[in-house]
Amino acid sequence: MKEVVLNLGQKSFPISVPDSTEILSMGKAPLLFNPEEKIYDALANPIDSLPLKSLVRKKLQENPDANAVVVISDNTRPVPSSGKSGILYPVVDEIVKAGLHASRIRLLVATGTHRPMKEEELKRMLDSRIFGLGVEIINHDSRNPDDLISVGKTELGGDILLNRFYVESDLKILTGLVESHFMAGVSGGRKSICPGLLAEDSIYVLHSGPVLASPNARDLVIEGNPVHDEALRVAKMAGCDMIVNATLDSKYRLTGVFAGDLESAHLAAFEKLKSYAAIPVTKKFDLVIGHTGFVGVNHYQAAKGAMACLPLLKQEGFCILSGYHTDPDPIGSTNYKKMMRLLGEKGSEKFIDAILSPGWSFVPDQWEAQMWAKVFQKIPMENLIYCSFDIPEESFTRIPGRDARTIIPEANDLQELVEQSIDWVYKKLSLSLGQEPLIAFLADGPYGIPFEER
Image 1: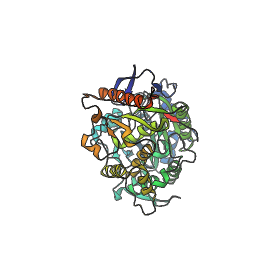
Image 2 (image 1 turned 60 degrees about the horizontal axis):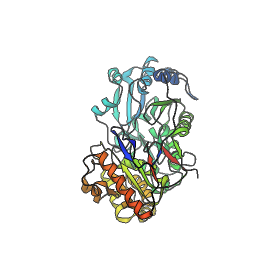
Image 3 (image 1 turned 180 degrees about the horizontal axis):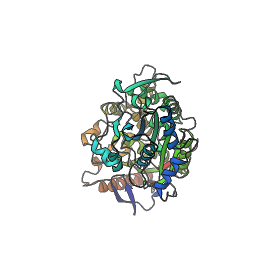
Image 4 (image 1 turned 90 degrees about the horizontal axis):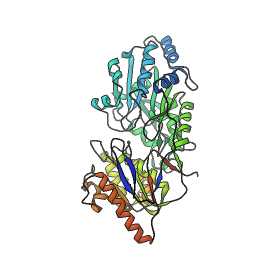
């Protein structure tokens, strides 16, 4: 046996895996030295844009009472928002230094359809200097009609309702992280607006069954990706003066800061990320050991970890997925639970047929169930071994997959549960195959992406 590290973001521990296990990791990326200096430099020398201070001064010339909105991600993303690598404080600092008072700056949390962040969570996540400035911090609410305003329609149809505070602000800045995304190719850039600031009803178009059925709606693909294309259309309609996006390595350390134009700065960040996050797929495996990483605050988000394993899996193979779920509800919304139960009852093929049928009425959060269905089109539901102590055991009667605790009832902690699950699957496969199974450990979970050109 050999030892590897299972890094679940807020919990990390070593596990033993068979000696033959192939360890698949993202490539090494040079770190940014003197990161705070590099962040300020990016704001002063952005890509295809005026410097941030110049943008602020221009807005103040047009309107001395101008206000600003700075969009931030919620805590499902490991955005560097504090310390010397924090991208947020330099943005606010530059805006204030350019003459716009802190009382006219609003930080807007792009929650999409996620729950609002609590004050104590914001204080843990953000740079403490932010709170000393006196800027207002609010959560986007995708279900409050008073906070939403129409910006028109797009090619996919439907009225696009966006956060009113964003649309009506004079200066619009997007901050965020560019990491792999299993639907939109990568996060960051346009995603801070769409779906980050969309009304729940408007998100339906972006996450509809036919859109997500596209083979290009996957990790590390933006060309021809309908989710990316629609998000960019909506973001352009809403307007954006500058993005400030970061890229990180597997240990969440800063590898790049990309400030500037909505499209070109985001493209530069995407190319940087793909250069080291893509893992070439050279073979398929009988067992893939993955995890949900930092983003896996609940089962809903865990789909990202499962989808990262998918390109490596043989047909009818096994996947062991582990997660540390810190959300108040470790599964997800009521709609998500409803859709996952439907997936379990119908099976992947009939579920996909149902949500693609013309008479289907869209259900919020069906998109995540659709991504799980893609996993179960390749492996049987019982071949997904789910390792977590955070989800109540009785809940696995309503969500597809096999609770590892039914296989290893004597396990006392997550480390033991994962290790014994690996041993159980290894023995089962060795017996059925008549030889040692091919095993891969996806060290970076949903961040290092096994990538196949199509």
